[in-house]
Image (cartoon, rainbow, N blue to C red; front, top):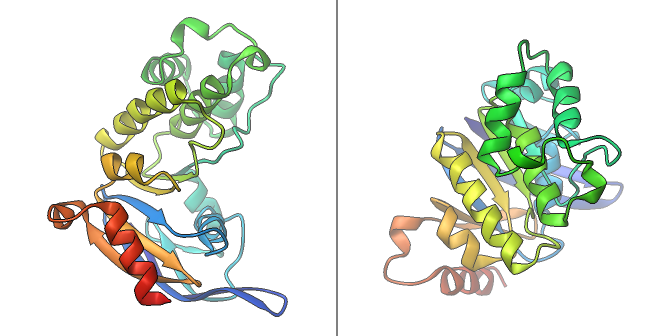
Length: 234
């Protein structure tokens, strides 16, 4: 579903990604971990077709980036710590706008479905500017899944959320994953990542330095695996 080979990303003289290899099978939920500055957000921006690779091959859902970015975007849902919503519109109006942009016909039933999935159906007529940070993040997920994407990218979705909002987001992410979508999520919250993902990749100094399936971590925990990966790299 996602194939990345020898990816290099440079900004001027600074190299952020240094020959990164990364492959994700359909239905996998991969937590991409790593310290600040390791290149996680840069990498997700490339997968989302928001940034161009300097060198290397990137395929998402069978399409090459950056040449086939339109085809990739049609199959992709992206959620970051910025909700990308129109604050002066209602929740329903926001989703109607994106439904038209994605070319979804007869979208009212689909809007109801995604609002129910994220627990906001009762707030569909409310202005988004009145929503809490957690509610806006849930609506952002509804926006991102509206067109039934095959692949979901989450870049630090828990940023700025309180405990209650984070717990609600846990449930929404589990619902998204349960529908069989391929998910890649960056996160600094190892406890939440451990409860959600089926695989954990550690990105450090621009490359993947360790990878493990959740079933292989039964004799240890994610924190120990993460620390060991960074120690080996150091």
